[in-house]
Length: 84
Image 1 (cartoon, rainbow, N blue to C red):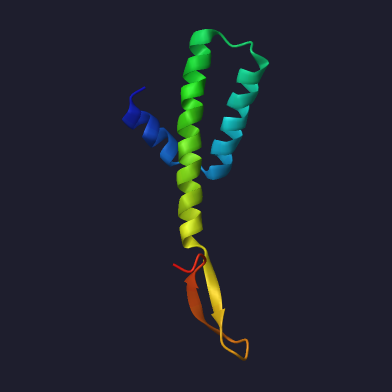
Image 2: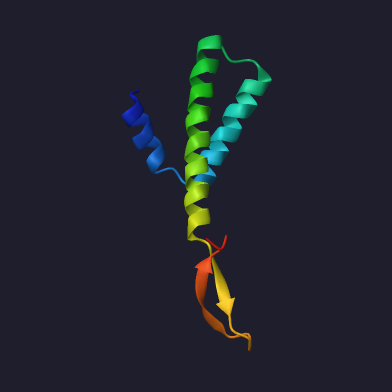
């Protein structure tokens, strides 16, 4: 499968499904009952899944906002969570 095909394959994958697949890969590798070539292939898939999860987490973090309050405690707007 080409890199573009792999990227397209992952683009529609939710964070939860990507993590579940990554956990499955880790479990298979930890058992040690996978042939060398298969181990390499699933390890590479795991690396792609890890990067995909990191991208999704970063996007989610960028969307989180902090609510600003006035002195009376009433909402006045929002700002980025990290104050940037």
